[in-house]
Length: 399
Image (cartoon, rainbow, N blue to C red; front, side):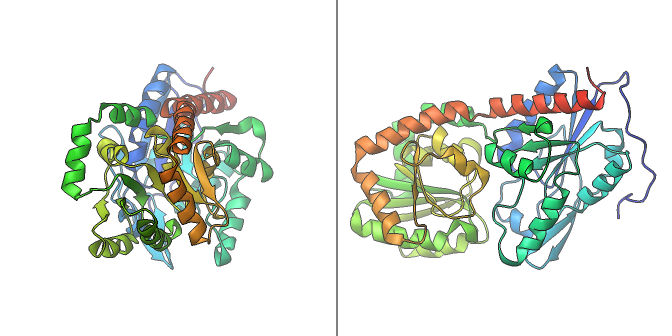
């Protein structure tokens, strides 16, 4: 495998050059573009050089159609093997890490480079940090062994960049010291989305409605990846019942993924159901502007921040496998979490009730506006940069 056996240079002590931090990610999703650009600029102000290394997505992730490129970053060609139901990656960039004072990698068992870096760290040849959830919130059944491995490796890094409060608790519970954990409060560029919403005109909304053939006023939206944990079949059934309960109900689906066919086929026989495929950056804003609620009965992650930024309250269910960002959603304050998650009728009643109760929906919108001021890309950049500074100072490569 790529240079894995070559002699590695010792970790450099403080030198005349600027401290150098490298982030290695398996691919570059569009929603991270602004974060990396802003983090690079913020670190430059601190006298730290950021190097971003990324590759291409595997078979399943590629179906989301959400990867982009950055001209200043380094793109490598990943070697990807399909093992069972998952992709395993080798990221051929070991040589590039030799001059980095800190290497930040995604906490993921399927990234083979991580194991090599952790061995080099044990030998005193690399400084390594994890960035992630702390555990796999979607692990179940025979995947528990993978989770055991992840838990065992949690403590063997120099620094931790945890997604939010939930992730911090998980990492601390694994025995990692709190003073070396940075809570980044994972976010996206909500300010950009909010500004785009404010620029959206009634004429633009009407043009989109005419293009899709939308006539009803009670429009809802789904956006994001389309895979099993999103419970798209459940959502299609819920939409059918909502159409009976609320005669002018219509549904917009934005996104792509391995389960996109479920929606595409359903839309063929339901003229009030509109599948528009993936829409990146601010292109999705007009669809939100025409919608009253964001419906996602399955796994919720960063989409909660879309709901806040675009003033479209989220209605989800209390499934056990949400990503850590579910902690941002406050039931009855800025969104709705239906429990138990399997009760289709209860979910339908919650959505129908909000479509009929405008004062209640407006209360949730007010909660969304308050939440979007707290969870921002700018705040995440400051937290992440601060954590990098602390890690470099602890290592003696930055004052």
